Length: 210
Image 1 (cartoon, rainbow, N blue to C red):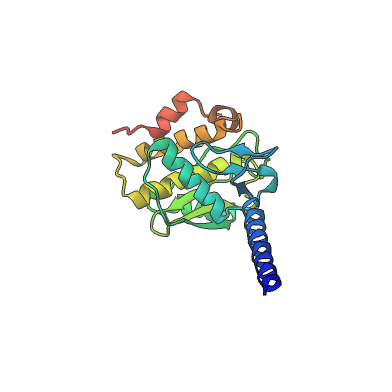
Image 2 (image 1 turned 30 degrees about the horizontal axis):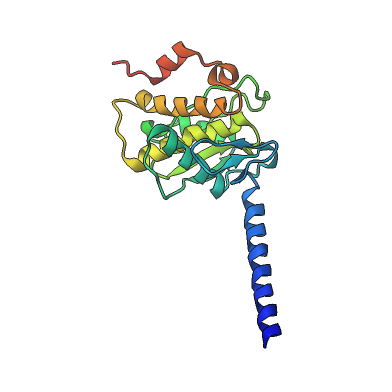
């Protein structure tokens, strides 16, 4: 009987190790809870970003960004992730410029100087009504710049779910750009460096003129 119990507990221990190993492996696809060489620890969270292992906008990545936004900007915690759609730049342009999204639910980040020519005209938008972030084809989250676009749109998702009100759409952009720049800083990047967006340009994009 003693041998049977011993084998039983050994089997339970084996299963526990297997489950932990599997969960850890899945999480490291883009974000992990343990920092190792090549990873960037996300302040205020238990996550670290490993750009070399980027696998798109996973649920773990979205949770990590939401947790970071809450800790950095005193935003309320949310329990509902946005839908993510990877679409053509033409579709994003149509959503942005043909009025298929409400004015308060769209924005156009500047093109990155470090992006390739095929990426330089891409945009990302968030739809309040659809709870959806639209990212351009080719987006993987494998660079700080790409991730910063997702961070920007995630701010709008949190703003919408939290019911935050602003005097104008431009004012709503202020926090999104601030979060985007602070995220880039984690990787020794910035809006000025990667998006050619200086203080005056930011003022124009985030101030209500009326």
